[in-house]
Amino acid sequence: MRKECGLSLRELSERTGFSISFLSLVERGRSSLALTSLYKLARALGTEVGAFFPAAPDGHPLPHVSRASEASEIAISGSRRTYKLLSGRAPDRVLEPLLVTVEPVEEVEEPYSHEGEEFAYVLFGELIFVVDGAEHRLGEGDSIHFRSTLPHSVHNDTDEPVHALWVLTPRLI
Image 1 (cartoon, rainbow, N blue to C red):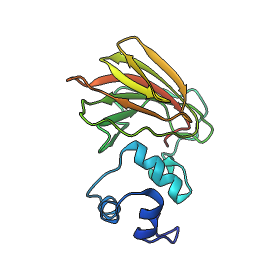
Image 2 (image 1 turned 120 degrees about the horizontal axis):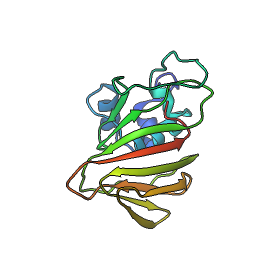
Image 3 (image 1 turned 60 degrees about the vertical axis):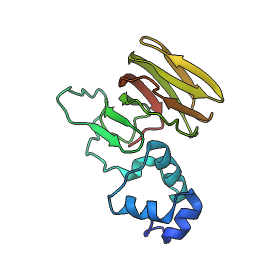
Image 4 (image 1 turned 45 degrees about the vertical axis):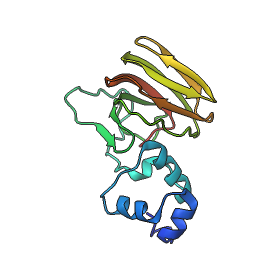
């Protein structure tokens, strides 16, 4: 995609703030980007995050049933998260429902923002959401809903993975 846009690694590095060596590793499949980095990369390339994922042929109108046995997970290295897609792919859908597993991690991600809004409901465990500088610790059964244009980050400072239902816009794919 970088080459299609006529950009060198150096130019993309300048637009994103990522090192040339890191971008080269990503292009060769030797390193992966966190979801926050995917947003930054998409903006630098003038596209949406969904452009990085292959589209599944699913032009069927609602309703769509997702089965537990269907393989629909996206693991993004660096973010210590796994995203299980809970809805079919179609161009006319607005919401992105996900089952997100957030592994424990010591370092806190940098806050980021993007278009849309997010809703998260903690199913198991405890997460810290920092939205517009305010920290919100959520436990099982707690939820949060905010505009994604506000700088935000998520952190699991416990020793156990956290499972949460996440609904966001715009769609990842």
